[in-house]
Image 1 (cartoon, rainbow, N blue to C red):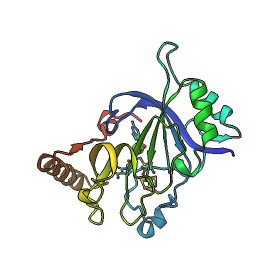
Image 2: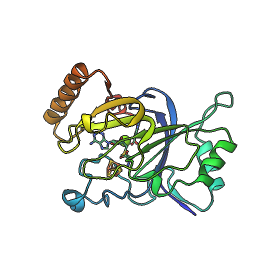
Image 3: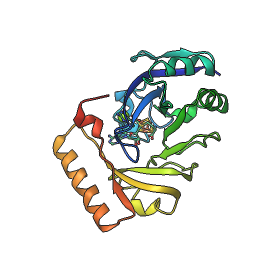
Image 4: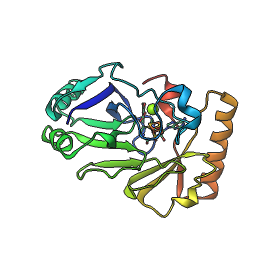
Amino acid sequence: MSYSIKEVFFSLQGEGFHAGRPAIFCRFSNCNLWTGREEDRAKAVCQFCDTDFIGTDGQNGGRFKTPKALVTHLLQFWPSKDVHPFVILTGGEPLLQVDSALIEALHAVHFEIALETNGTKVAPDGIDWICMSPKANTDILLTKGDELKLVYPQPMLMPHQVEHLEFAYFYLQPMADTNTNLNQQHTQMALDYCLKHPQWNLSLQTHKFLGID
Ligand SMILES: C[S@@+](CC[C@H](N)C(=O)[O-])C[C@H]1O[C@@H](n2cnc3c(N)ncnc32)[C@H](O)[C@@H]1O
Ligand SMILES: Nc1nc2[nH]cc(C(=O)O)c2c(=O)[nH]1
Ligand code: SF4
Ligand SMILES: [Mg+2]
């Protein structure tokens, strides 16, 4: 198995439970819910994606032939010898490529591993933190984990439809749009929902207003 990686960067987790925590981001190429091409967006299952995940041409991206080659590449972005490294596997959809061999190779050099996934694939064992972000009109196969982060509003996937799943924390993340008026409306709607339904917490995409990756 080789791995196609769009980009790798060191930043702060911007969203959800670990917001503010330094992490290496490993963005896998490709997704099963959108081709990533603008001309296909309107017919995609997931139409609101804010991410470029096509190809391997991003910062520090590339093709890695073995788990070890990818792990060695990732490790160079961690700035400390004293604090164990933290990686966020994202994409695109990382579970199209993440396998047990990669999880073992990451753990062998003491990585703590977090995952951002759309929940349409099952995850290999051993991932330390699973954040599942369900999408309307998909079959959710990954029904257990640490954090469920629902982009809101999705009229065809309301919070009550996923709030019974086995996750420790539930977040609503306002849907970001290129239209800033809509952004404000979505944030207000998510905030109102959390105040009425306190199982839900608000997740803001803090990296966007901090102006970091
Ligand atoms: C780009 S996705 C990659 C991981 C995986 N494919 C997924 O959807 O969870 C990373 C996170 O960004 C969220 N996201 C994508 N587009 C968004 C948008 N327009 N507004 C808010 N969150 C968004 C996703 O729901 C997910 O939680
Ligand atoms: N800072 C920062 N935090 C993030 N959390 C999830 C992200 C993602 O695209 O998966 C992301 C991202 O792209 N940047
Ligand atoms: S599932 Fe994730 S990566 Fe795929 S299009 Fe949707 S938000 Fe983007
Ligand atoms: Mg992002």
